[in-house]
Image (cartoon, rainbow, N blue to C red; front, side, top):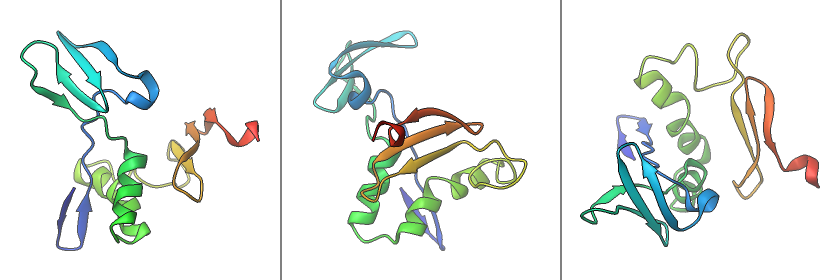
Length: 127
C-alpha cells in the first residue's frame, strides 16, 4: 500500500489464493509455485513468487489498523483505476460502466461477486 498526498493505492500482486486453491504446487507461466501456509514460493530456488493476500483481506487489514473504510475502499477501487488511466471505465459504479462488483458482509468478507452485472458467486442466495 502506498500512502501520500491524500491518495492511497493498494497494489495486489496475488499469485494464488490458498483460500481458493489450498496448499500445493501450481503452474505460474513457465514457473512452478509452491503454496504452503499462505506463502507462495518458486519451486526452483525457493524465491518468493508473489502474494497470496486477497484484496478483501487487504481491505479488512487496512480498516483494522485504523484507515477509514471509504479511504481503504478507494485504495482498491477508484484510485488504482485512475492511476492506470481507467478512471472513466472502472473503479466505481455508474451508468454505462461494466457493473463489476463485489458485495461484502458487515465483516468485509466476500458475499457475492458480479461481472458485468451478472452473479458469478452469490452466497446471499444460499442463506
